Image 1 (cartoon, rainbow, N blue to C red):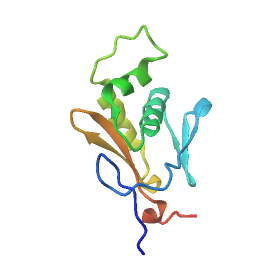
Image 2 (tube, one colour; image 1 turned 180 degrees about the vertical axis):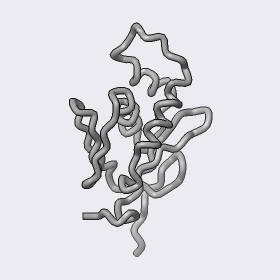
Image 3 (cartoon, rainbow, N blue to C red; image 1 turned 135 degrees about the vertical axis):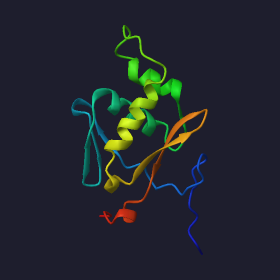
Image 4 (cartoon, rainbow, N blue to C red; image 1 turned 90 degrees about the vertical axis):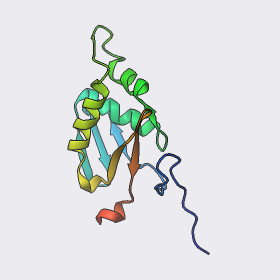
Amino acid sequence: MAEQKTLCPCCKQPLTDTADLTFYDPANVVLRGTVLLTLTDREYWVLKTLHSEYPGIATKEKLFQSLYWLHETDEPDPKIVDVFVCKIRKKLPSKMAIEICTSWGRGYHLVIHPLEKVGLAS
């Protein structure tokens, strides 16, 4: 009998068994398998918020709150979430097998591919 795969409610792609990302808060480092990603403070919190909503969609409002919960005095532009998502997309190594997808009019969501896709399975 074929194994049933759980599908993402947003994009209908198969989900990995776990969203196996490890976040190290003090250093703003994200680890998946043997792949390490270092981010700025705000990039880190955006990715961490996306991961906390996995496999669902993180609204732009929620991502905005994750960016500015520490800095109440800043007067940010509402488009700043898009800027940080773009910066993170550029930094994500292909070996991490993670994508940030846009859900138009709603926000963003992670697609976490199996590491076997990139030949990094343990």
